[in-house]
Image (cartoon, rainbow, N blue to C red):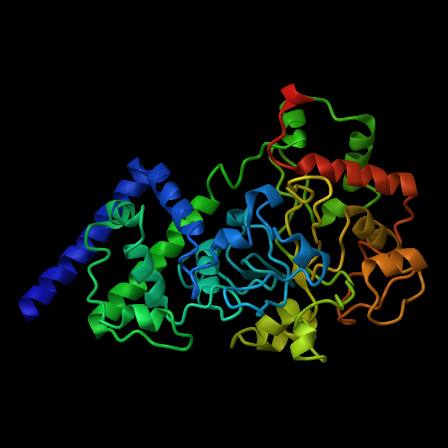
Length: 422
């Protein structure tokens, strides 16, 4: 029996090493295709009704697709009906460019999620670290045990064989208990595995995340096919208004200080964190559970880290600077999108106007929405008053026409632009 286990362990390790080498040299496309299958698999949730793509839809710029949720709290419902996260789903596109989470001089850089908590320290890749977390989050895919993800991938219709072809024939050689189906359909359950099978399952769970990360790093997710990209390649010319917006973006509007716009394929983020003074979103479902909820962002995460806890307070309210690529991408012009970490803003015009005028308008009563604030020409107070960026926004002195030009430029960042159709 011992010899059999040793041989099995040997073949698992050797098979995995061989598979990784083969993938890196010969079959990157196969790995991306595998990751895509996992990304779109709704069975990888407690009630078999939610996949990664449920909150990261290509037609919405790889962000939240539910117009009703976007129009309200912007957080999306999980596998369990009535359960919501606390933040708007970030875009999964271009996320693979984010570096390891680290402290650079006096600011934090990198990681994934709005608060940077997918650092890359677990799997060597922030995107892979991020990919593991929604599966087990009770307000997202809500599976009770990482072994449930492995079991369902290894028994998936359509791609379980592909998984073993990519990662090795022994990657799914796990002795599953007889009650695995019941356990994986039960919130709070634990899958009972031997020590060896648990070690194998944990390793395969990492391979699943790496597969998703490979897909998120593919040209499908990171297409660089916007009108701006076409203009930088000389295939199309921006309109005068769009070009004016681009110049303002890089100059007077100060956008490029955080949304870097240089180079042939600009990413429109520097991967740092800022508190922009965004008001709380009164429709956020988090307030139903706790009226005193405050999203501390990066600072809240830092306080959970042994070596960074003392920097938490200095980073309260800061959230990841997102890429602006696909910021206006949607299935049709009337489809509602939401902006910033909590989805307070529902229009590009609204958020650009906020950046321009945040500090020169009266404060609205607490609980105002973006629409109410725009109607009454005021802005609510920041959700977190500490650490607000007062250097790069708040009183930019832009005209209404300048704001419209910036919006027009932002609309050139949607992937899928066809110069022959315009």
